[in-house]
Image (cartoon, rainbow, N blue to C red; front, side, top):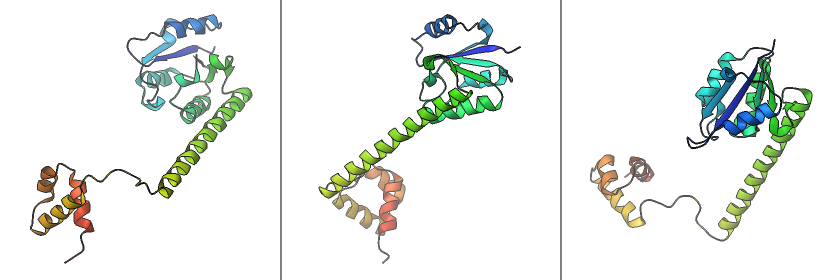
Amino acid sequence: MPRTFAYVRVSTVGQTTDNQVLEIESAGFKVEPRRIITETVSGSVAISQRRGFARLLDKLEPDDVLVVTKLDRLGRNAMDVGATVAKLAEIGVRVHCLALGGVDLTSSTGKLTMGVINAVAEFERDLLVERTQAGLSRAKAEGKTLGRRATLTDDQRGDVEQRLVDGASVSTLAREFKTSRQTIMRVRNAMSPS
């Protein structure tokens, strides 16, 4: 007989999962308290790195049902959610999301829904890349310098080059000029051989 599990998550210690549990019960899902996996972890953490979800995966068996209130409980973005649902489907677990009308995400309808969500997410990513590239092109056309500011002024760079020629160590120069060793090594590597 299939068992029903609930995965409820909040982002901070001050929050409670009570509303999520109540919402799952109100939707008609009967979940034994020992099968409610509660976790306090930021939504930006990948599902694969959440301890509570890892414990849940150890308990799940084919034909089990997993209920979540919203898709963001299952991952940090549409790709993460899609991968999680696919992984659960592989082991025969049905995944119901209340925010999507309780649809089983592993069913034909659920797969279609996930496909649409992934397509929208990919579209949004593409738009973001296009806007970013257009902004960079405009800034470049206006003569703006792109990238991080140099940590050393031209004068400091000249001083570093001279000190390197005089035999100063990379570490010493990094400390003196309050910059990273990498910055000093880039100066050293860019110096023309004498």
